[in-house]
Image (tube, rainbow, N blue to C red; front, side, top):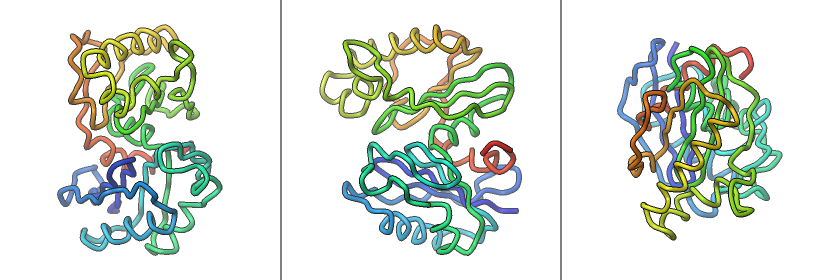
Length: 232
């Protein structure tokens, strides 16, 4: 059973095909995410990428927003007005001719990163800021913590997005990240925290043993475990 795994991001859409054991059968391919991307354009991008990859039997998609039963509820960095209410799962099933599961992109990266022991949290640092939470390998209901107040009446996304880092510089951004980690530790009492996303390469903190930086490929590899999670 081969899985086409797709990671939709604010800057790029990436994809690969995974074996039953989660091994990439082809190097990741990617395309730029247009700043004014629409649902139909996103479908075309994913379909075009899929044509360059080996055959697959099913599809997993990580999407940057709240997703319920394949339907997009929010898409802050892609455009709520364009995506809210769009059934991405159904549209892709029709276009690709294979069953599709869609979840939040941080949740899918979490599936690719966690060890399945205790309370594990994943944060993604990319165009925006994403989070997911697991207990003994089971995905918790998705919480949009990125848009909760963090400091000075600004949200985690306001303070830790890619735009924020470019505005204030890497040193200040890392200081904010350290404060965010302390806050999330007090909120969730995680046993382990994983940091992923494209901007994880800019982390310059001395991390304790219960915090790890994970390869950005986790956002693709998690597509296998999405199909084994009964809550997805």
